[in-house]
Amino acid sequence: MRQIGRVAVLSIAVSTAAMVLILSVMNGMNRFVAERFWGVDPDLKIEAASGKFFDEGDLLERVRKVEGVMSASAVVEDQALLAYGEQTAMVRLKGVDTVFPAVTDIVAQVYSGQYDLSSMDNAALVLMGGGVYNQMQMPPVNGQACRLYTVDADRLSGPFAMQQAVSSYAVYPSGLFSCIPEYDNQYLFSGLGFARKVFDAGGRLSAIEIKLVPGFSEKDVQERLRQEVGDAYTVKNRIEQQQAMFRSMKAEKLIVVAVFAFVMLIATFTMVANQMLLIYEKRHDIGILSSMGMRTERLRLLFLLHGGMVSLWGTLAGVVAGSLLTFGQQYFEWVKLGGGSGNYITDAYPVSWQAGDVLAVVAIGLCIGILASVLPLKQVSSFAGKIKRDV
Image (cartoon, rainbow, N blue to C red):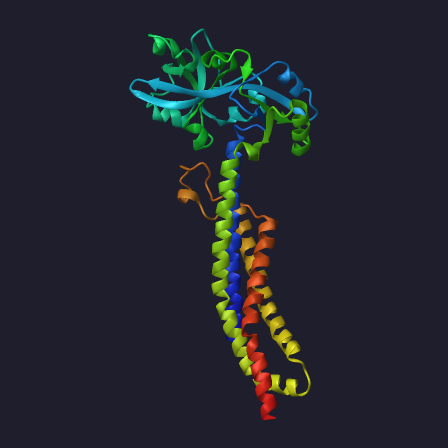
């Protein structure tokens, strides 16, 4: 009997520990991906509520005067076609001003060459994503030029429409950057003036990107900016800038929680067996207590408390074990990516222990354990009635 009880505690503990560990790994991976995004994403980003571009006017200066804003950078961004030899690729050309390196951590992402966005009449130096560079099958950075093509839809009329609508510019990669595939495989950074010329943007912008003063509340500054710019613009924080990605991360996490909750439910079958055997073993005691006047509800409560204690001990043991494994991986990096060969962005699996997840696991474990304890309680009534009749 005691052996079955230990098995019940152990099964709950193992499933709980696995759930804590898996959620911690997911948190670590999600945080790692988010931090890679934040290497090139600003704290806050202002865009037009509708349309691609908006007039700069005095908007940039007004934004820079808002309390909590440390730096604000003007941005012009749109699609273009990049060609080198026989290779072509659709890319995002992002023109930025000289303040941009102070707004994001883009300079730290450069792994080859240097951050130089100088421009000439019809040519410019660009910072190119490593994925784009590999896709174009270019030789090492040595002054080789690519051609950047854009189409002005307003000029697509007349007998020589295509020749008039298509513009071509020479771009030279001054450096290569790498953060995440979403940027590496499609982005080029250029000077703001060159991008305005390429997209015929004039005095317009596609976004204003903002760096906050450390210590200021992001939510408060975001609200001040919304009041300053009005409803014609959107002010997005980092999560809102990558909303689709963070939504998919949440969905993945919920699916994992649901799967492991089902695993925990299966693990509690041993607890059901433990409860049933315990009730059967104590059947004579149940009958005696019932004949002495103890109500059946109180007898059920005793066995429910026993099941709750088994569930509690198993859940707490699993949480402690899972937490220790998580902290051990975080500090000692036991499990390496690729065997620690150094071919990956990070050497070991990233993990992140979060109290909210642990509390959710405890709640799920206790609820499932109590549910498993309730199922065998019908036997208490039958044994109590049977012994009464025998007496």
